[in-house]
Length: 135
Image 1 (cartoon, one colour):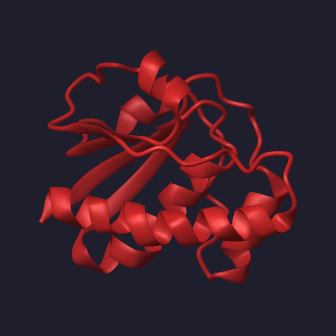
Image 2 (image 1 turned 30 degrees about the vertical axis):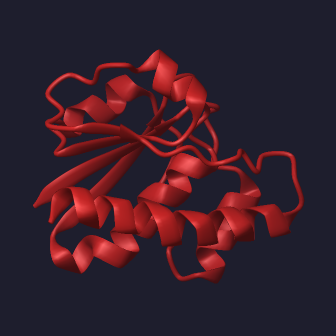
Image 3 (image 1 turned 180 degrees about the horizontal axis):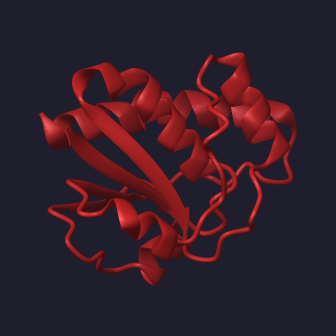
C-alpha cells in the first residue's frame, strides 16, 4: 500500500477533494490518500461534500484535520501541497519519501460550479501526477 497525503491550508475544499478523488481513482491500485491542513477550518465545505457526492467519491470518514492528526498515518510515500500557503507552512514533512507542489485555486466562497471545476482539475492533473510519482 502506497500512502499519499494532500495538504492545504483549511483542509475543507481542495485537499479533501484530492483525498477523495485519489482514493476513488487509485484505491484499487494500492494507493491510500489522506489529507490535512496547516490551519484546518474544522469543517468540510458543503459544496466540496456536494461535488464529491455527485461524483460518487464522498465517504463519511473525510473530515478537516490537523497535520499532527494525519501524521499518525505516516510515513507517506508522497506529500502533495495543493495551495501556496501549505507549501510555505510545510516545507518539510517528516518521513516523506517525496514532496511535490501542485497548486489549485481555492473554490471556497465561490458558486458550486467552481467546485465542479476544481474537482475536474484535481481528477485530471493530480491523479495523473500521483500515478507518475508512485508507479
